[in-house]
Each structure stands twice: as C-alpha cells, then as structure tokens.
Image (cartoon, rainbow over all chains, first blue to last red):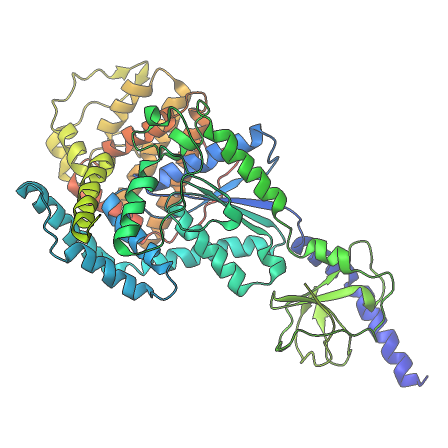
Length: 377
Length: 181
C-alpha cells in the first residue's frame, strides 16, 4: 500500500470520526419516528376560531381514548368565510377538477355557465334578486379563485414538512376540507417517494369527494349537505358524485338540522358516530409508516463493503445529495452511512472520498460522481 | 327524470336555503343588534367591573368603536360578555380572549402581517374555547357564533373581517399546550 493511499485512508477515517457525532445528531433530528396530526376544516362561519376549537376538541378526544399521548392536532387553514355561496362555487370547481380532463380554468368557466345560463328559476322576484346579487358577487370573487391553489400549496408544504422530518402525517378532514386533503395526498404521491407517501393517511369525515384514501371515510345517512346538496351539485355539473353515506347516526338531526356538523354530529359524544370516527383515526395512525426511519433500520446490513453495489433506479439522475444518515446503533466505518437523494430514494452509497464532503452531516459541495447503490423501495 | 333545468332550480333553492342556514356571518343580523336600545348601564355585571355603555353613534362612527379601558375589547362587547358569561370565570375569560381576537381583525383590516397574526390568534382563541367549555358539549361552538357577530356588527366591520381573512397567509398555527391566556 502506498504512503499516499495510507494517508488518504487515515485522513478519511479522521474526518469521519470527527463528524460521527454530528451525523448521528442529524440522523436523530431527521428520524423522529413521531406522528403529526392535522385537521382541515370545511365551511364555517368564523372559520379561524372554529378550526382552532375543532382541532383542540379532536386532540382532547384522541388523548382521552389513548390514540395519542403527547401529540397535538394542528389545524390547516381553509379560509372559508362562512358564506356558503362562496364555497359552493369553490367546491364546484374542485369537484370538476376531480375529472382529470378538466382543467381548473375550465371548471371555473363551467360552473360560471351553470349559474349564469339563464335557467328559468321559479322564484319570487325578491329571491331572484338576492340570488342574482349573490351570483354576481361570488363570480366577481371567482376571479381570485386561484387562491384555492395557493391555499392547497400551503397545506401541502406543511404536511410534506412533517413527512420529511420522518413523522407520520395523519390528516383529518371535514366536509370541503376533504377536497384539500385529497389534493395533498395526490401531490405527495406524485412528488414524493413511496417511503414518504406511506407516512400520509387521510381520515375523511362527511366528504363531498368521490374518493377516499383506502376507503377511509364516514358520512352519515342523515348528512343532507353531502347526500343532497353536494350530490346534486356534482350531478348537475357532470362531476364525480360524492361517496355514498356509510353510517347511520340516529338523532343527528336533533343537533344539526343539516346532519353535517363535525362537533354536532360526527364527534358528538351523545351520538354513535364519534366512536367510528376516532377508531378510523387510530387505524390510520397504525397503518401509516414512519418515513425513512424503519427503512434505514431495515437495510442496515451486518456487513457491507464499499464494493457492494446495486441498481440505481432507471432514469435517476444523481445531481445533488440532500443529507446523510447513519444506521441506528452503528457508527463505525463507511458502510453504515446512507444517503438521501432529493427525498426520492434511499440509497446505499459507495464513497469516492475525492468527491464527497460533509459538514454537520450535510453534503456541501462537489459532484458525487461515485454515488451508486440500491434503491430501497 | 331530472332535467338540467330542474337541476338549476334545485341548486338555486339549495343555495338560498343554505345562505339562510349559514347566516351567522351575515352582518345584517348583527347590525340589528346594534340598533336595539342600550341596556340600563350598571357598572358591575355579574360581579365584573365593566365600562359604561358607549354612545351608539360614537361607537359605530369608527371601525374600532369605543374601548374606554383600552383592554382590546369594545365596551359594548365587553358588557354583553359579562352579562352572558360573567357567572363562569373560565368561560368569561375565554370569551374575552375571543373578543380580543375578533377586534384584532378590525385593527388589521387587511394589513398582510397583522392579518396573518390575527387569524393565528383566532385559532388559539378557538382552542381556548374548547378547553374552557369542554364539559358543555357544543356550548363552545355556540359561544363563538354568539361572540363574533357582536364585534362584526356593521357592514364596515364585516368588510374588515373579510379583508383580514383574505389577506392572511397563515397556513398552520401550532396550538400551545395552554391556549388560554
């Protein structure tokens, strides 16, 4: 072995020894193995107050049933302002967007035509005037409907941040909030690795959507908003119909004449739905897999050498490394280190010490030209 | 067979029905409250010292209204909260917190930074309501629906509420372990 080579080896060992604690600290931060719970509100007057109230109520119920211990439920902001007519249009557009061939802009146009197509309403003049005014008002507002897109993007960022921190993300959505929840799910599936996406579970309550993740939803037979309004709206537009009701909640209409309220019907301790909904949340948390951490533990081999190479996913371009993680309980040698690439895949790596540099466990610079290995599903 | 025309008719009727059902956010009903005669004005309600009933004209002349003790709650709202919730100290405190949150919507009035803070504070105040009314199921929700129209009781104040709601960029507010101030 040449002196130069031995010096290189010693240098690398020294560097890795020095950064070991930092790498472990980084790995510990990234792999919290925890869970984060989110709540997305539906239509509500005083929506900000009510979503805070609902999120805390859900948290209290989950704590009381032992489904969570220290976790909190964070409300994501669906800024419904309580004027039903506004959300009626927003929901119309979201429903139309469920049809993959319909763009958001087209859906806005279609729903506009639906309301301004000169239907012969059999209404009183005053009702017609009121409706006309409301229609004019909300279609003026509809010019700003891309706000829906911005709101959705913010929610996606929040949930993705939880997943990328190694936490499960359980999203509990009520009513129109389900349209956002499904958008989050679709985005995560499309843009994240299966490992990450496996950490996201949606719990749908009173959903107007046509799909629910793993059929995990509860809609009451007594829910007039979903079973009548949303269904009629979808049918009139030719959009996918909401999922059918699947639970009976006797007495629901005594608390909410629409049979739809989250606290009034679905979480009401005096009614039967609350047990079903909370069980659904618990099952979702069980079904979710913590991103990264279990996979890291699973693939840590007893022996691993620099020469052990595998297949890189076809079409993958390694252009930037996001971070480096160690296997739990192991801290010696290169073979215990694994890298993430753009949150897409977990790869074992073969080191080319000439091109890989780290500080605080974060890749700094240089082209990782010798990164290769096995993509862990 | 349901025709497209019938669909439109049904949709319109549903929209009107639900507009009526969801009328809590309508400034009109709240406006009518402000025109009711002011109560005779005790300075102590349910054992709580409260400011005097403000002059209705002065109280509606500005967006923020009259807050003579500068506690962040309009005087007329503070008196009504003392009347309705004063007998229960915990619920009274939660109601005052909600009223303060609501008033910040008026202060923000569409200012982006203040609006974001206002909606975030409202989330925490809503959580406080849940904590404070937890033994009285649904009473908390009803409290919110009672309280907010007190503050947003004119078209101008309702417009400010909407402006603040629209301007907020808040997405996810972490609720503290103890949301009540």
